[in-house]
Length: 192
Picture 1 (cartoon, rainbow, N blue to C red):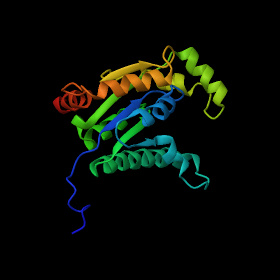
Picture 2: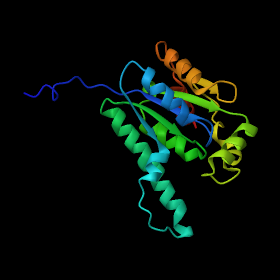
Picture 3: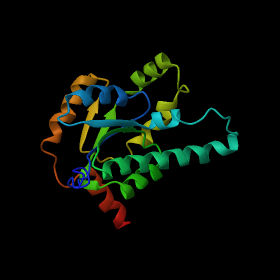
Picture 4: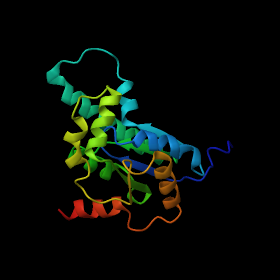
């Protein structure tokens, strides 16, 4: 019998980086992957958008297409974790349904929800430097992205560099508290 078919099942851990565009999530992920004790996959939502073919989308169909992309992304992350893979995902919870979808799909004990904060002036500066985002996008996302208000750990990329944020997250993994932020959020959602 193939030894892989008898490997003990496990749920992979999801390190869920949430913040506005240009907040530094991808930079943290790049610093985090090499310092973790086990292999992790970095699955940024931007990578899923980049996989889409360049066929023009009529403006009236764009919202539906984006909604389907986000839902597919959530299911891809959930599937990878359910197969036992550890994931670092970077996400923008700028709509209530995105968090609700993730709460329904992910094993709440196996999610480390990380709030990635950055002051607005710095976000705007980064957007200008990037040039690949609509001006003001981060400002429009700012209030909603952190509206749920519950995190396992938070970092501020305006005052802390990505490598230090990554070390903070790595060190947190050894002693994760219970209930997790996802467990608390799911309990709150179920109480409504």
